[in-house]
Length: 390
Image 1 (cartoon, rainbow, N blue to C red):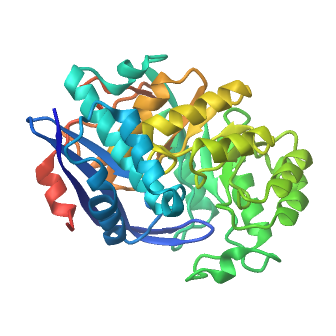
Image 2 (cartoon, rainbow, N blue to C red; image 1 turned 90 degrees about the vertical axis):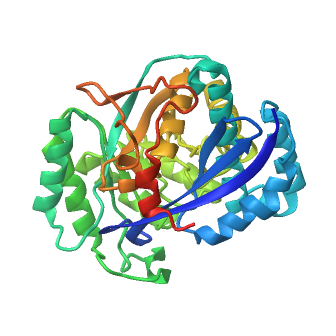
């Protein structure tokens, strides 16, 4: 079997307006990568782009990375991963190029599963056929007050979730906050209003379940350290990506300041070498790579192994389309140190509207790992055509 073509597929659709600490989202997008062969089989992956223009990623996939793959045996996944990495080290070991390598790697593993007639998790070795999930939502939005946040979280609890994550940090008046440098200050709040959001979520959830808050690295370390007591009083259990991951000393200071709150990160970090450095520096309690950004199945599995070596749990970041979520489920099911997976609950057609059958879960929102070959899902290509832009 030989690879004959590597295509980038751009998807985009409108979505309700929402905001985290650093950006305002009015549309959702995804970059799928399709690897075709000289047989009827193909592999499908997703490169996470963090909002970058999809056309840029398309050129990276088709012009920069594809030449290393055309004519090669797709079964040589590790050889191909190393080839893409080392041929692009000067400009690609981090950033959008590594994101595209991640998507290609996912597609190669999807193809491998289809070739063998089994889901990817079976190729890697199944650890569990269920993956615990937490509800990811709690964004800022037009007219969304504390009562609306309360009702949103009540909906998650009714679905069966016990753990919930919300957004905080959109506080431009806080000294050192990076929101002032972003394109829009819409939906900004004060520090006290953010604390009220945490308190409201905690009160709604009661004494059970873990409450997480994500700052998206908008604050400086000093502000997070000073807020540690308030976060604890408000009932926070997990703080995600409080500052830029490059600030190792700042992350260490944050962990020291709030021993009762777990630090989770860092979705924007890529590659096992970078994660190994951060883990060895003891900058996080929960390791949170993204399969479509951090290196695909091949590299994120290595990241998880390093985390296991330091007795750290893994909770995969997943904020993409159905392809991204399916890949995350397959990987999470193969890891002995999976703690949970992010399950986005915002309206997202790219995650919920392009499949022939939805993702399944039990009454406690543990996701059942799809058992079809490869990523385990069946794409409805007629629905894809409605949101495809190239």
